[in-house]
Length: 212
Length: 212
Image (cartoon, rainbow over all chains, first blue to last red):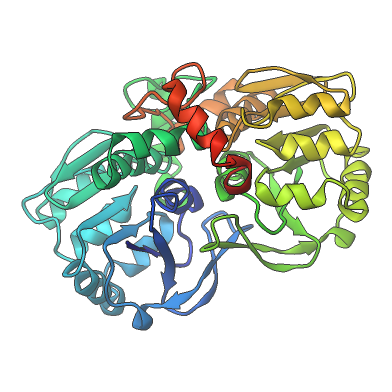
């Protein structure tokens, strides 16, 4: 099973690495990090780079495509090379997936028209601009399209995918290996549970520039 | 605030990137990924490399040190260069921290003697070999030493650290930015909650070789 993960300048690290840690443990999984050019790709916070082992031109098919989010995706919303690559790989996938604002790239590529999808809360409504139906939910499945909410939601999405791909027991094994028994010390992880003033503060500071 | 994250061949990606995503968002944080040699460092699953921007020799002080786990740590348990570096940086830190089997490296460096600490469930008992007191808990604080359980537990540890370093409100903001409102689709993330046969299976397959 070939899994392609798209990297681009200023993506958000955990959007890619959370699902990677789960999906790469699937039996027979072969993961390929792919970017415009092979080599190190800097994440949004500047102090980390992940290596892309393949160029977009080197990879035209995958069983599962994952597009992470991050402030850098804004620059790709009208980048023909990237959108065309997403469309081409999508014609070969069993699953086309995204984390965070990565769903806006799938939408910009025309793949989510008329479909239910989610994204980071800060940009969820923008899905409408591309004819998608925004759903405020941690993970949304519509046919072969699976989208996750912000950043850390990719871990939950990936475990759900692992179960659908390889069965519940394999997914549970992956969960136990990665000791994914979350116990956040705070309860501010969603608009539902965070103090309203924090969301206002983040919106005022144009979170879109700093997180994806 | 300088944060040093140690990288080494065959570390577990999420051990480092989970906490990174939280801690790098602290006001004034400067994160430096550090390894024996600068350049790409391959993770345990093979298909991902993170870039180390500094060599161990280039970095001798930090406010916070984070040591991730992973199968590759076994090779470092008697590596004088690495253990000496950990000890040296530790003399300068406000917080010395680990995720997963990274605590065994702190222990091998002699830093956890007589202290309460945790680790991945598969190797928790090994902490005793170095005079530490194993505690089956998601995150354990003992003085300036903060250790997390397996892989994904580093996210919870980092949020707790963020709160202690910059206050509850900053930690909550980081949680909301990264939409850390976990909703795992399964409940097999700990020995407490997973079917016993799964843990037996993983022990039989020598999980220590494949996860950290």
